[in-house]
Length: 314
Image (cartoon, rainbow, N blue to C red; front, side, top):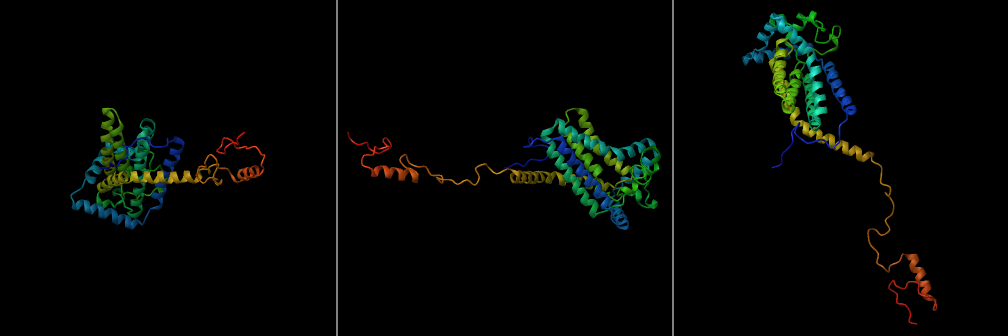
């Protein structure tokens, strides 16, 4: 039975990747991610309705992890402040660090891992566009959530509006909560560290990082539990589609190389023999005419002795 390769398991790519081509690609994807969050702001009332629908659905399933975590982070600054720093910064630091580590130390697995991450990110952008969702922290106070980032804003660089630096809160889409790419990216980092990290500490971090990130996004009231579940689901879809994306990219690259390749030097030159071989005594037309003219003179010495024409007796 034919086996298909999953990201992170195949052999080295056909062409060696260079950092000066990878960096612009990653920056392009991140730019699309940021622009998508800004453009997909959606209607505020629809976002609030989606957030309340998620909250009611969770309550119907008796899934209520957000409220106790949020109360704990609000009551205990030694938990709430580090959690806010975690939410505001680590996905900008850990994810690129794991990418660089894979590029330098696990180059044979880098392309598949990078494609998986980028494919999942684009699916996350689709979720932001189709389902703008109000996070718990922006619901009315009657729903029992406290915005810990606003509560502890004096401790960090962010303001009361969002996790962005002070004065830049209006440049972010605060309704891009479904799915949680914080959790999705953390899960990707954890899988990469678990599979390719060599030490026990690395494997502990591989498990702890996504789990703690899931607790942080709920405890800070930035995401619902189902947002975290959706982030995991998006990474699963990206994992399944990444091999097809790589094959499509390889096909496109091959076509571009073929189109840009110069034509061969002998292209368009006529083929005299059309692939056929001539016999030892066969001559091209001009040689045959010269041979007939020589044969018409009685005392002419044969010039083709040895090539199949008998020499006259002496």
